[in-house]
Length: 108
Length: 384
Image (cartoon, rainbow over all chains, first blue to last red):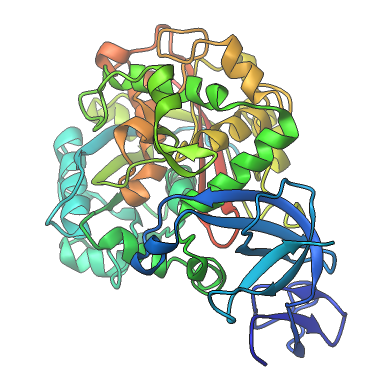
């Protein structure tokens, strides 16, 4: 699979992120990946980064980063380019800068 | 929970903080240990227990440090739990002495800092952070606390000036602490005019990484008395990990789970506390501690700091040495800073910043932003 994945537990159906080696709910180890892109959720909060300790990000500043609670349960840290307020409905997609990363956009 | 009767903490020491250092973490930890010997009159062989916290000691742990420093303790704890390490070390050490597993436990925390150490620490801080936070340019606590602060402001209507009052009061305290790295006066206007780091956080909301170490000793009360040491009693202590995992954002910590047990064990309530030391890498987390530990209601932290003078001579003495926001964050020592300050205050040795009638203190710790929130919380109630 390309791009970040959510994990679904085959034993109990729990969905989790970031990747773990066990189900955080039932501790089973039969975990299947499903694409994070397309998952919907609610923006909890957003920050605009003006400083990064990682040199390769310095040209991209300021950078919008947010915390998204997916309807499926997990909490995802991702890019949030638009100035959305907490409570906004969003959908995850591949980030323009790097398809291995996630970005959230407002649901139309 | 069993009480901590007859156990005391004593000999608070600080190895002077420095913005950067060419020394390794073991140098700072060794200087802290040497200061504990100087302060107690004990020789190294009498220290038969060790609780140690450090990030930059890696790849070594507390075990390696025993050989580095030529110690042969019979009780050892390595506590890589960041900002909760002071209270947790106190708990471990007190139980070890109660059980007879050690007679005198040295609790030390320290780290070095150089041009690459902080970035290296952030890049490898945890697996979740490395895989799902750092690639977004958000490595390190700035972004995590910016998100928590933004959510807190939206939920509770707090303003930047509310956080600023806390930071300004701590800077005023730091003016009376020669060991604090940031002692220049800070006004609320200075605070508000600072450059943004990770909105809504600006420069003076963010702790400054540095090098340094702190430490203290734990032993039986009778042993301290025989050595002529001023011991501080432990009335109660709590710790908790990964509290409230279903909360979408960290607007409360583990203190809210355990505070009733804390006050019940202490036998006193928040109103009897003469000084409070919260873990303050960012001001929002201090407000959460004040709320979750019962000094005010949930969401009332901003109103609380508006209503109180938080300086050492004020109505609610808080982070009386300036806290990390003004003293600097010497890695793991940031988790011990508040505890050693409380030990000094309760022993009456806090000098120009001494709180009048300091009889009871609360110290709380918080640490380890593993992914989106801090996983470790701890607190203790101490008595002169």
